[in-house]
Image 1 (cartoon, rainbow, N blue to C red):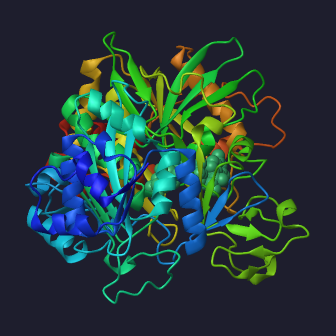
Image 2: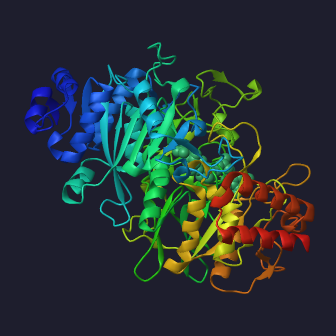
Image 3: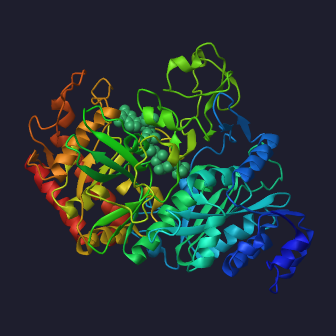
Length: 639
Ligand code: GTP
Ligand code: SPV
Ligand code: MN
């Protein structure tokens, strides 16, 4: 329903006394979309504050309909933000400003009263590698320097969204206010967004997470690329857990702008989870059925661009196995009244890494993404399709390719056609192996958790924690090669505990205590560590990965079932001789190298972990985790 300003007044949005500014503004607002009557008083109040601050020309309350999407697609086409991809059904390509291509970890802040509520405070850790703290005063200042009038000339979109199935006891509601139609359309794919969420707010407790986003306007008032407005020099992403509030400025990209994802589901989510006694984690959720027909669910935490989507959609090479996908990035997990840990995927779509996705590596993703999908920063082909590195040569035969920057491209050009962090944004419901229980409001029961990362050296294909506390230590000690998902340069090995380093909403030491406490709350799953990325001395992967990872899942499945297919080692339980099923694998696998535990490497690894704990976590490190490090050191010394 289209509303004029006067109608909006009658609907009650302005029925209470407003600030002078707001009244003035609303009188000048011309066209509105949506129904203001559907807003709860608390949502109205929040909206008033946002309008007052950002001074948009129009307000659009998103209903989540197809008609609304068509309208916004037309608008973005006109503005040049997206181009159609006629080779597929309802697919679009967005090319961003080249200065706005990934999450910005260095400009992401958590605001708490005291610094140690947000990050570990130690003598050495400045700046902290476990997040950035901002004071309330500096947060206000950052907002005041950027937001007043930032939506002048633009429409303010109001997106009501639910993280998790609407009405599930594990779900939470958010209201994202944004001036980007690209964000609206992406949020409609990634979350359950629209009128049904406002109805649920009206009927329920009315609680919601406040998410304010603007692509911003540079101080000069000029956007370098009008089709992708942004203000990269002043980009900032702010979180205030005590108010369940997120404020993001300057970037239209991924985790910086789709605020349901990392900002809400992980940073604010982890603080809510701590308060309420559950876990919000950077984890895939998958169901796996063995040849006997028994099914279990596993979660897996790998850092950004380290294989979660690929694992969640795996096509097992081992005969008789079936993998089904519940989620590819985030898990919210809580013990039920029986003490069973149950997980929901709070998301509704996949925001997946495009490069490397092919019929050979991830056929399930390839069957998912060529309908109703927004691609960002991939290359396009002259027949109306898309292209990226690792997609397969057949896709560039007999066509010309335009790279993500809009320039003609050829293999000889020596550049990448697609940006390394280019993505597809696609509805989860289109995944051919989506799990039948993926929308079950009760969640799915979790039997095992997997940690992992990109470790070119030293770390074996798979090992198992001796117990829960050892597993928490393994999570805390995770390291991985940097990827293009954030602004880090080069292939440096970074600490990335629990794959959550960029996503903690509160002090990592307290997070560890919270994880340790889970054992007292219910039946905890077994914990494993995997590494698909170990390389030989000549730089080749020692393990074929992708569908062949089912061989590792098979071993994990058997361990969850209690089979004694392991032997103890210094770092945990390794598959016993011949217990990893390699039947039918064409490739010759150098198991010796793949599972070797070089003593020098592990002594050095233990020193690195010790240094990191000391410098970055300090006195916030729980005793139990410090003890586990001593056990590792002693065991490595005895190797
Ligand atoms: P985010 O969405 O950033 O959280 O990433 P993700 O963890 O979901 O990573 P994703 O599955 O998209 O994989 C990232 C890259 O790693 C892609 O280019 C994949 O092709 C590659 N990759 C995934 N699994 C494997 C594997 O088993 N072996 C190898 N060699 N590469 C893999
Ligand atoms: C990640 O970086 O882990 C992602 C992509 O999943 S983003 O949504 O940009 O955070
Ligand atoms: Mn991710």
